[in-house]
Amino acid sequence: MESEFYVSTRRRLTESLKGGLTVLTAYTGVQRQNDMAFKLQQEANFWYLTGIEQPDWLVIIDGSTGEEWLVKPETDEIHEVFDGSLGSEQASEMTGIKKVITHDEGMALLRQLAKKHSVVYTIDNPPYSDRFNFSLNPAIAANKKMLERMFTSVVDCQKDLAKLRAIKQPEEIKAIQKAIDVTIDGFNKVKDGLATAKYEYEVDAEFSYLFKQKGGYDHAYDPIIAAGKNACTLHYVENNSKLQSKQLVLMDVGARVDGYAADITRTYMKGAPTKRQREIHQAVEAAHHDIIKLLAPELPVEEYMRGADTRMKQALKDVGLLKNDNDNETYRRYFPHAVSHGLGIDVHDSLGGARFFERGMVLTVEPGIYIPEEGIGVRIEDDILITSDGHRNLSAKLSTSL
Image 1 (spheres, rainbow, N blue to C red):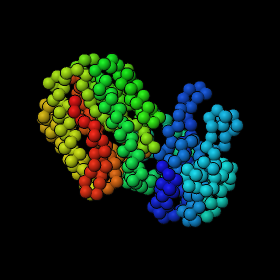
Image 2: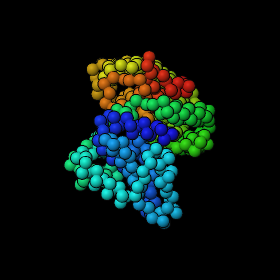
Image 3: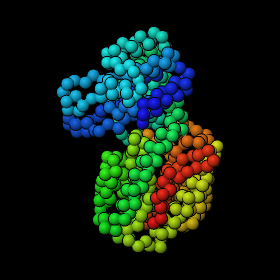
Image 4: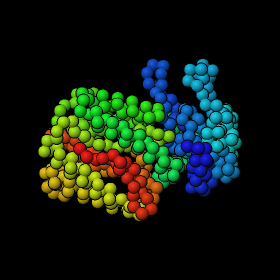
């Protein structure tokens, strides 16, 4: 992204908040083992406003005056030698923010701004984070506590950012399409070699190699390569089982390119499919294409969800797994996840709480049927852009066939 993109996102946030003061933090590094940190995946809102991918930076935006500052972290010489650092001039050029100040200068500035602004906007931890089964990056809570010591009121602007991020700008759509194209190339090559693969991790490794070969790209999330019954564990990431003949292999994979994610799933066959395997795959495939056809601008999100549920219940009835449309317990046993989610910087991007689909939104469509007792799991997922007159399947070039 060029600096003009980040200048634009900050301007639109300021307009959404009707001026005011905004302070957002980057993530901090977290321990991987002993004296080593994990590779940083930047907090999406901070990246959306700055493009900075290094830890511990702050951005300060005074919407009342139009002034902006970057606060660089304190870094000693030893860590600069080992880890490198982002220079002030480079940070300014990347973000379009002219003023880059030290941490101490940043704290003094905030104390001064608190005399003029009683309210400061920032972001809090993600909604429903109390349901997560992992620890949160501590930077968000630490930043909020720091601001609470200085300002009368600290207001979460996460919903405002989510609404802005839900409508993708042309540069963002271009990046998502590039990530999708890289991912599609990987799927096509992996499918061609599936017959000779012996383990799930061979398929995993092939995707990683192909992404790196294309341009040094990483996975947008841990890939799922799930053979047979493994596909019935929705977030299966061990990818270490032996591939058997006459086995369905579910692959949920997406590259990250220029900060944006792809998210594609296909279920392929190793060997010749049984009648039952083909029946389940065809049921999911037909439902998948029918559900995509529902998407259009101004369509109420709830109406779309009802339509998707109706179509998936029909799919389950077609394969003998559901008898009664009102039997939601059985329905959710065999289709236990949402049919769609937003896609962008985050793989599970928010649609901003929208009641209606709008032009510029990007979301997945990913129906599936999972039958643990039969060792069958099938999911098909494409990435869809809402357009002014309907929708465009950004991953349509990749066949959904078995």
